[in-house]
Image 1 (cartoon, rainbow, N blue to C red):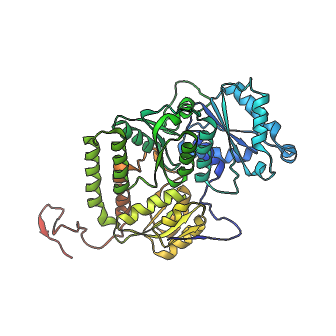
Image 2 (tube, rainbow, N blue to C red; image 1 turned 120 degrees about the vertical axis):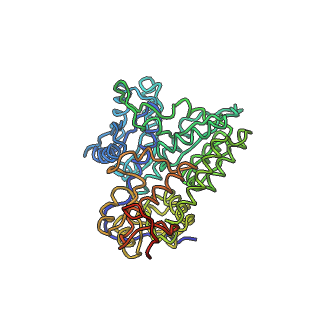
Length: 462
């Protein structure tokens, strides 16, 4: 079992993690015609908004209750009620996701009671808009926990209770982890549909944050999972959850609507993709389509071509727990060693399965120190890890959130056969590009002959 070690110090140096309310807001952005609402000060919302805009490079609908000094002392129920009524009148969202922040959580207010009272008092004004609440203080957890809480809140607050349950045999719920990209969700949808099944993805940022430009100004999200589809999650024949942090929403849906579920800790390897495809074949009763078999063959070839560049390499990874596990398992499976593993929080049980001697719960300052002492060949972190890479003179492969100094991060595939194949190529090319220069002619390891600039063949000199 991997040892998980929190690093205790007075201050974070170049923080690795982003906050819980940001993770919850990201999940609510995956719902159609939704509006995330931060219950707290304007500063909390502004900081999250800047990170979202820099990462996705899109207009992000995000609002705040704008708590001031008086409301912070006396209580924020009035500010919450006013914000809900204003949002309903101005934008008419189908869903408002309320995310609490540290400012209001430290007062110990009864948010559930306040919201219930507001819904009862303002039932006529708020009709047609679902309102769900997540307790997401900034001082605890990170993106992963916030996404989990928002997913669970959507299921508890929106899913209809039907007895008896009306099952749609072809329908499959997909509960993706926060670390799956827009391209990953599109790939999941296409793969499930190729078996004749009907996927319902919740949350679904692939429709809301995929870089499309609407023909008119829309104040809410303009894509994602419809509220009506969330309400009918209980009619699916099966639920597929991706990432250990999606176990709680899947389990809650099973309790509410008796929908059985299967959890995949990762989909970034040949073995895990095989299990996923096998499950779809079982659920549909259909054979695996030829195009998926061909993609599997392409991944096999990529693994054969790429493993030479992974063997013996020492990598350092800084990421949220589930993404850390997926990345570490991928590298170890190709012969590399995870010399340094740093994560944001120590709550997830998946950390015990990370294939590394130790997982440190710390920041990017700790990541830099550990990687510098470990003799690493490659760093993996989000864009804030670039300074560490520059100082250490090592290549940085950007993963996670935020990635603001590269374009197209949301259109990178990281799962199933295509995603694993693409990632093999990306890592191998990064390592090749940063190989130290050697004197003399560079040759492929399996070639015995080289070509001079004049085109004449000669025996290579070693």
